[in-house]
Length: 316
Image (cartoon, rainbow, N blue to C red; front, side, top):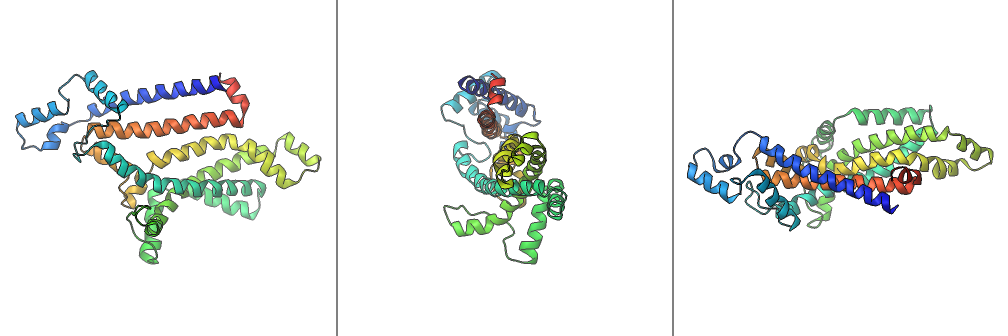
């Protein structure tokens, strides 16, 4: 297990390193002068050049990259041109907002989707399977922003029982946080539930048709024990991949929800940074998202090794 762990960790570090190079090069390809965009068209060339020197944009690209990465290793994420504040302070405000919507959505979606997947597999062909499978199909094919708009119309405008948009930190007022987070959490978990439930159903059906399941039934083992202890355990291996992808959505895929419900999170921050050519803010935002994403992939790989020892033995 130690060799498998070290190998996966090394691959993760290499991926993050390549992401830093890619995002650094990509933002410099974007059209427009970030300093001119910041100071405005009426700024003099002398002011623009002074600001460019202040931001180290006058230095060679390799030197700029080393300055950025060196600062990151020291805990210095630089200062945002757009907000004229340290990027680290901005992240401390934005990331908790994104996480406080994404984590509850994931915690709600996972157990419900696993339960739906198991029920539809066990009750294959019956009315409950047809109804739930139809709901899964609708959930997978419905855009998240459309679910958000529809839920706002129904619950906020028509029934008037929930707010249209807004966000309150749980540390400030937990009751208001729950009240305003119901719709965005529901919309984010809706798509998650559909994907995980579909994957669980597919793999459960395959597991229930295996020879070892028929052998357990022949020995008189209860159907509940067969489903939960044997079939579900083997069906979870592919599901873990989907769950890992859902976890990545917490940080990197919340943009649509944040835009629909006017939540100033990390996704909307990245859009503003791109629109305003805030190089350092873009680089650090993508770096944080990539570290989180690669970290989740790394944990999923390690979890694979524990769920099925054959995987870690075959990947040494």
